[in-house]
Image (cartoon, rainbow, N blue to C red; front, top):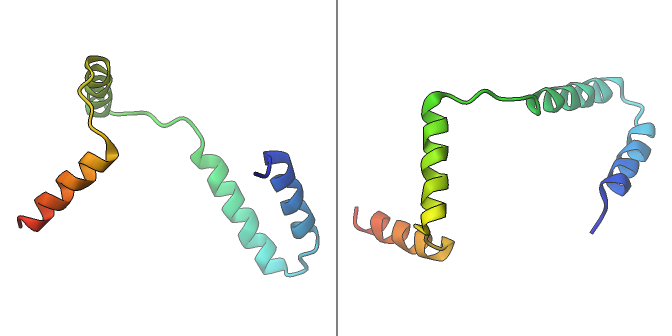
Length: 80
């Protein structure tokens, strides 16, 4: 599996060979917008409450596997 550094270096090499100005502007905009998305997101009180409920469920062992959830969802969908 590639490391972050090797991926980054590969991108830099590829970007260095691009001559299309419009493409580079679009790429710059894409990279800039993804950087701003990594900023801190403020959760609503409802979202915080749901996360707290989830943590309590996990702590109490109220869990089901992904396979069981998929089966439950399929049964529900087929019942419609």
